[in-house]
Amino acid sequence: MFDNEGKADQNAKECDDERDMLSNLIAILKLDTDENKKIQKQLKKANTSLAQELKECKSILDETNRTRDRYLVALHDKEIELEKYKRYYDCTVENDKLERKLKDTLGLLAQHEIDTRSFENKRI
Image 1: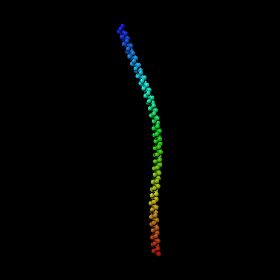
Image 2: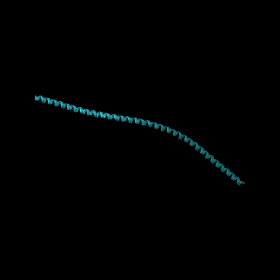
Image 3: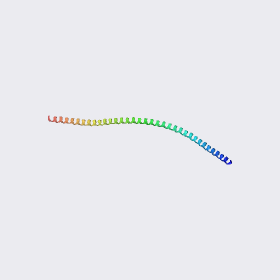
Image 4: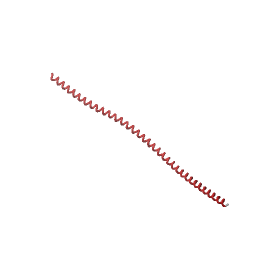
């Protein structure tokens, strides 16, 4: 009988030990669950913050691209304007050369006319 009581006490002690272990495991699981909830909240906040930053970056990138496009158009317009000025300058230089040739030719023609009159006057 004493042996049965010892086994009963030992069984009761084992049950108490198992209950304590289960209780400890449940407490640890609750702590882990609470910690996971905190982490999930932090991740959600971080995700929201990052999503907002991404949205702002996209907005800045879009504005930058629009600005770049405006500058490219302005640069193209300036290149066209520069080409016009180059053509105008080339025409001006060509006109100056033609005017010099015309003056030289008119001078030669005038000299020729003078020489011709002079020759005619000598013949008379």
